[in-house]
Length: 385
Image (cartoon, rainbow, N blue to C red; front, side):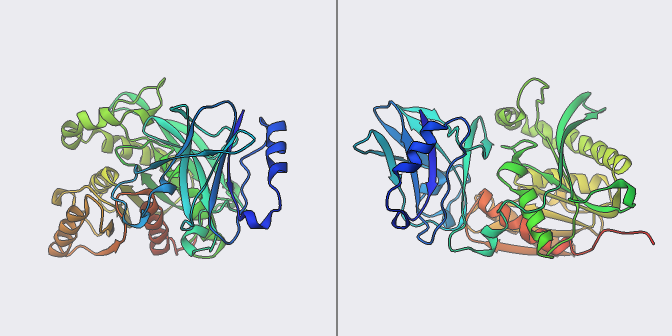
């Protein structure tokens, strides 16, 4: 039994049956086969014992430009061919990154042939990229030619008396013997994420490395911490959504997580060759955490990115930190972002305000990160003479 996703213009192939044969012979070692051509269609295939098979994907959502929320997906039933395989070919889709899974006899089945995955709430999704017709935005999601180093580790919060997980990205060519000091960016996930969200769904590393390769920004260190409530060593933190929601009033009052982020920053500064260029960005409720962190460390950050922010005027920076506010016009928190922007104007805080199409979606957050990097990361690493 195997599953696969194929992006292809089938007119370029006289017969695709050879592909099914190859995949069925090597089901444990063959990655998902992807053929990118000019028709921008996506074909899904499932071969195996089943009465009914469907595809569930945000790719099937009719109008991703106007989607209100990131979890919107559609489910479409696949058709069985004469050989017993199930197929579905979509109409043309926009160049973007999408997630999908199969539904076999009503049960959820990820694609084992596709190792590119992303967690969302309690479920793992497969990822598929459509670069056909190339847009500059979709191009930055491509797998970079040169890769840096990803460290999966943790830090201890003395205030909370627990270990929190984090991912640290070190740029390509990182070498402490060269005495190079790098800018550092702290990326904060939302109430529905975990320390891997900015890597899996945000494609932060892909975006940064492709932009560095194009000379659009400088190499930097990226720190992506777990900022969930109810962290447990033996439980994946992407399953703590309801803990975050139920404890939200206390979280907004106690600021324990922000204090843990401050401890993390102190650890990074004492461990890695960080320059005096410090940045922070957060999406949704992560923007609130980012803003509170800025106020706990006045004068530390040069700029802050607020992507689809859930913020209040109390989170206004108390120093000269430059604020970049991004929001989609269909975003459920769009009115909140506009009110915050007016408070920035009233407070005479240096800021930039960006409105886009779409809503509270990863599609937008990836775009916001790309623009934020262009705005802040033009300063090269400080190389002592």
